[in-house]
Picture 1 (tube, rainbow, N blue to C red):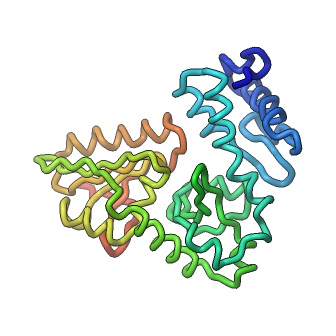
Picture 2: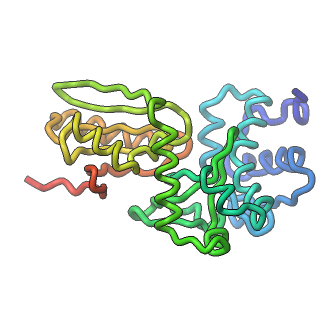
Length: 272
């Protein structure tokens, strides 16, 4: 692969320096598009679409720093949202419905595009994505309106698609006790989203007891555990969830949730 600008993108830096290097590489990768700095060092604009850089920076810090990897990460980060404009108005429901999947994402993503979504808690929403072999992009409200579909129908379709896609393809790590856990990290982009599936929550409840507790610190990690687990386990796990949320790419929530087959919500432990 061509080495962009003689290895300029080794040692990415922070703030304005990082933003500037991303801009220069974007203009090489997508010369037909216009990119400019956003209102602060954490954003880049392409037309009316705003991109946050936090996830990209976290992914870069975990990588090996080669030009090839940086190119891959930037394309992975920007291409799905750029596809919104390209596909908007072209897709019809009968063609796209089988490609829909539910996905958690930070609430701030609503500033990048008018996403079709449902609120989970402050800072976290459920969206729907149009999946493809190499990436996915978020569904926007305008597309639902054009199809004459409401959120409930679109979300239920996406949920059933994910349920079907995951059957027989989800490897879980189960620890039977004394501190019972189920952990999931397949890196298929939908690890955390699996907790949205009622049948999956029912299975977890059958192993851990219902209701159970869980965390989704980032898109590619789900951990569930029993209410009967020790206080020490709860303390260590809560700390790990908060740390992963702060440090890992694609962060979702630092909260602990309580779930059952019937649903889930942020967990509010009873004070002693």
